[in-house]
Length: 499
Image (tube, rainbow, N blue to C red; front, side):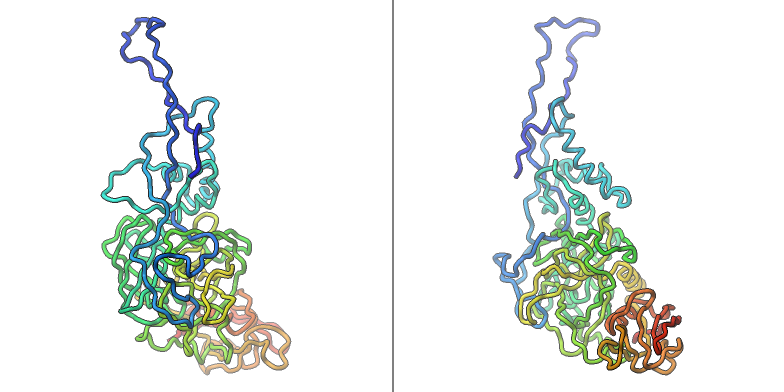
């Protein structure tokens, strides 16, 4: 811990209450100066987040860690409780006003400056951060685990303020079914306990549709939870905490407003380490990846093979970033999803957690990571992580809460990556077949056309097109840009409904 000696000022002098009104006090009876107060130990501050840097799968102890790359099989020993950092401390006395010649006021000013960096649009002002950094003593039956620790208030950063705002809106999810178990993260949507996460977190990578769920909030409260609905097509799910109230919902930002290079902060529970925070930037936008489906056994066909599917292309080195025990990439079903790419460290257990912007607003739900090794290696952060954009998350979550399920668009076409088509001179999604009466056919698309943009998003291959079509709601109108015989055209199509 850093030493803050000399940083805390004395109490202001108080008048002598024993003197009679109008009676002068003899010099010998003057009240002596109040001696300086001893320094106050730093107070850990609750804040949610993700661990900085790469955490090796073998580092937590004593519970052994499983291999995390999809395709590996191992039993995961679940820790009996989330791992936390420094225990919380309570201030034993208030901080007095600064005395002349000391920097006590500078400490608070520095903290407020950090808060104001995100305070304008995020609603995180100096009062909020001050209460987080120096909370009033509260009587409680047991000490709550800390979330963010501040040892040197004089060097509080904008990231500290972002974490202070976001951590209360992120939870740790423990899922279990028989001997299988795993941990992931989730983001609070409503004060009464609706939480969005990934389907693969609550189904244990598709192993079960009826898991036992226990959810721990950043302040140490534990709730039972039930599944409201899953959406394996975009790997999103909504769960509901039982008997919850007074929770802190996340604030949404529009992912369509992002720029490459924007600051990102990832918050979650990598390797079961709750309230961990990592920082980075938006590395790329309009990225699409193909990963194994995590539909529960009773979920049925995802519908991503055949129509709108790409032909004969692999899923790439992309794996779920979760802490499940039984994992399999699966030889059959796969899903194509549009993602934000970030270099903020994302590790197994971050799945379902928050990716936020510089104002602490949700821009994505962390879902997968790239790995440098093979399918039998251990997955960990190599600086290439992916999050489902907030605009898609909000639509899907709202539909699940309202109806128990989400809808997805259907183009009605068989597509391939144009780069693999003989004679092609451009990238895009090459239309091999169209379904009679489908959206593509009704919109004037025909075999041989190459789609180069969908709703203004560039399309470079078949995975891009499928991901963008699935991101749109069933029945929505989409603008398709395509090339035919060297000329570029646009057409509006009314998407069908993915079964």
